[in-house]
Image (cartoon, rainbow over all chains, first blue to last red; front, top):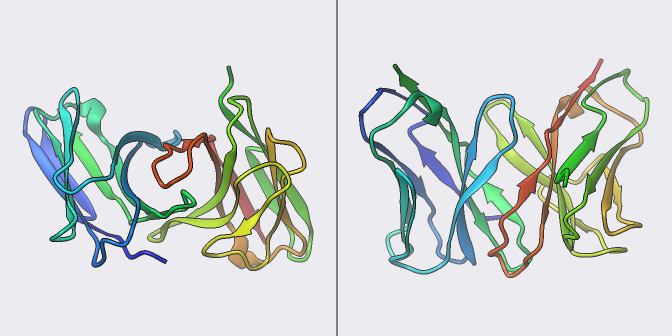
Length: 111
Length: 114
């Protein structure tokens, strides 16, 4: 079982602020790192799948980086909007595509 | 294209009762998964399947059984429900293995065991 830690657990920001949060893992023995976005009363939706050290992904105002050597991934949100309010999940996968999830970072963006 | 659907959406059981949760996907995905989500615990994998007729244990398989008789369906069974199985259950499917497959999640089933 892979170990995945996310910080902070929750975060309150003002609309327009940029923010970032961390997914950390003690071992690079995984196949990919996944980021999911989970809105209240909905299902988790995939944001990024990252496999290589130094990988960077971007989707609109959201981007992510992966550093397997130092054991972390950052998720960045530029110019946060109220609709960005959600729980952001990080997960590591093995060869069988089994995901081990972190506890998530709950982001609340105040208008 | 409905994606991943789960039946039922809510259920209340008494201790010792049995039930089956149904997950269906119409994306022709090979891989299917069952997770449970508990406060402060995140999503934890119960069982998964890498293809029709195959199943495997995940992180927390005890007290659950699964079957994948048809490619599009993945059933999760509780033979004798316990209060510790009160949780929200999510099904997911994926079309790629090798660790790089994006998983598509269903809407969840909220189960309460009294």
